[in-house]
Length: 209
Image (cartoon, rainbow, N blue to C red):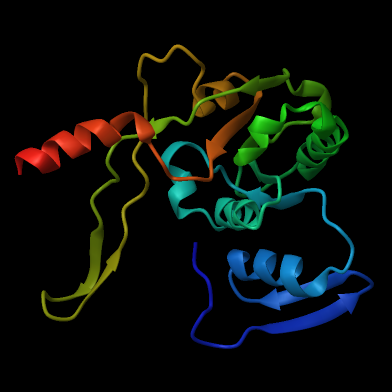
């Protein structure tokens, strides 16, 4: 969730109600909602991102970060990604986004405290098997980084790839499982970063420390 607090951010108006922000995804949403849009906003969609934002990927994702910033500013938000880097079927994700927007009024209000993290298989819309509400999956540890040049004092490394998905026993389908089966995955993720279930346990630990 990078935000440019220590340097100015350039904004270029390229068309009616269209702007290019020379900053992070969070900068884009922040400036868009607070400075660039005069009319009320109903929903923020970040994306369409090329490449998955599944499992632990969301913690590194600018797309998800932009959606989270919208939620901090009290806006319902969707982070939208396609599962391939070289996307062939952006129209499938766009179609799903339109369907979700049209149905948003039917989503229970409490669900809007969450960001909806959406991952869409890169297939024609006719081949999409459907939609699944999912939980966030997990990955194994990333692969070891490789040193490309230099020595221990001055070296250049290439970071290792993300680890494989970890299959765990869950009562609900995990996001990567849904995508692997040909479904679009819609994962509600809390914007509050609070796990109240463990507060009492932590207090007991602190009392004993």
